[in-house]
Length: 632
Ligand code: WT7
Image (cartoon, rainbow, N blue to C red; front, top):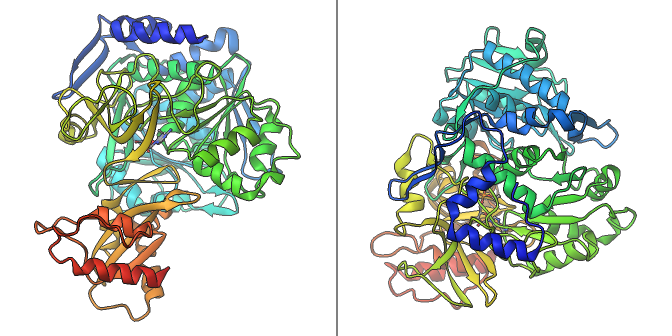
C-alpha cells in the first residue's frame, strides 16, 4: 500500500500524484490481488462521461477483503458486533469465520437464482448479516443495493423497482434503542405489487412474521443446504459493485453506481492513510451501513486493510447517553469515526456522561457528513480526544466513493472546522458561477474536482444522462460536487455546504423536491416549498411552507397529517420540523420559487431579505413574514 507516514511523505506523494496521476494509482493498485493485471490505468472522458480505471483488470473484491488475509489473519476479529441492548452478549467474527459465512450465504443466493450482474436489495438493520450479505453478493458478482432501514415501504418499493431487484434480503425486525422496526412487514408492503422471486429473512428478534410460501425463506433454513465453499466470481475492474440511492435536486432519488477495481483501490488507500490504521487496532465507525460511509468505511475500506471493525446496532443515547463511552472502554476502541449530529447531541447531554469512562485507548477521532461547527469540534477534541487525538474532518460524498479532503491523522496540522487538504490523488478547484477558476488564497467558490479518481461514480442507474447533467455538464471538464467551499492562505479547504436544493439533516441528504412531492400528496395541499434552516443538533432542519386548498380548521391536526404523509412516502428521516401555512409563495415572473427568500425567513430573518423587486407579487413576502413571527 502507499503508506504516508510523515508530512514530507504527504508533500512528495501529493506532488507525484498531480504530475503522474496514472502512475501514482497504478503503484497503489499493485498491492492488491488481481486475477489479471490491467492493460491501461485509465480511460476517461468527462463529457459523456465515460470513466474506466484499471482497464481490463480482473479481480474479485471479496478475495481482497477476506481470502487474501487468511494466511496471516485468519483468527483476527474482522467484526466485533455490539448489540442494541447492553446486557446482551457481543459477537466476535474472525476473518476465517467471515470467510465461511460469506461463502455459505453466497451459495444461498445462488440457490435462489442470483447470479453475476443481478441486483439484490438489502433492507436490514445493523447486524453482521448485513455485511455478510453484501460480501456474499460481491463474491458471486451480484450487485447490492442497500436501502437504509429508516426509509418507508413506498421509498423502498421505488428503489427496488428502479434497480430491478428480484431478490430482497431482510430481517424479521430490527432494534434501535427502545423501538422495534418491523423490517419484514415493511418489505411485504413494499413488494406487494412487485414481481419478486425471493425474500430471504434473517431471524434477528424472533418477532412473528408472515412467510409467503414459495417466495419467502428463512436465512438459517436455507443455509442448512448450502456449502461453506464458494469460488469467487472473476469480475472486470469496471463491473458494477453496488448501487446506492441518494437524493438530488429532483424528486426522484438517484442510484449512484460504483464499480469494482477503482472503488477497492481508493477505499483501501484512504482508510489506511486518513486514520493511520495499525494492525491490531479496533476501529469503530458509527454510521449505518445503509449509507455510503457504512459501505466504504465500515465494510470495504477496513476489511481491505485486514482491520478489526466494531459494528454497533443501537443508538448513542440509549439506554443512556454514556453508551458510546461504555463501548469505547469495553472494546478498547482506538479509532472512533462519527458524525457532527451525534457529537452535538452527546455534547448537549453534558460531560458527566463521559467522566466515569476511560477513553485512553483512543488514538484518532473523526467526523463526516456535514460541516462540523467550532463548538462541536472543540468539545469532541477536548472531551473525547482529550486533546491528544487528531480530529480528522473528512469531506466526501456518496458519489466520490471515498474521502477526498481530510487531514491525515498525526500528520496534517489541524485547523478546526476545516476539512483541510486534499488526499494525494485528489485535485480540487474552486470556480466562480461562470466557471472561472479561482486561484490564490482566501477565496470562496464552487467546489469541483478536475481530474478523475478511481472511486468516482460511473453513472446513475438506468439514467446516464442524469449523471452527465448533474455532475459533468455544469462546468466542462470538471466533476461538480454541489458544495461551496473556501480556501485559506495555506490551501486549506473549509466546506460551507450545498449550493443546490439538497439539505443535510443529521448528515442525511434530503432533496427538498422529494419532501415537497410528498407533502403535495396530502389532499388539502395545493403547493409547498421546502428549505433547510440552521438546527442546533441536526445541523439543518426541514422547514415547509404549505399552501392549502381551504385554510385548515385545525392547524395542528393538518400539520400532523402532513407529517404522516411524509413519513409514509419517504420515511421518518424526512419529517418536517416546521410547517408554516401560507397563502402564496414568492415567485419570479417566470414562476420560479425564490428559495433564497424562504431560507432567510426560515432562519428568522424578516427585515434584510435582499432584492424582492423581481417578484411577481412582493406582498406575499410580507404575509409570510407576519405569519412566521406569529408562529415563533
Ligand atoms: C454531502 C454528501 C460523505 C459521507 C456522508 C454523506 C456534506 C460530507 C462533510 C464534511 C462538510 C460535509 C457535503 C456533501 N459533507 N462530509 N466533512 N464537511 N460537509 O454523504 O449523503 O453523499 O452527502 O455531505 O455537503 O456534498 P452524502
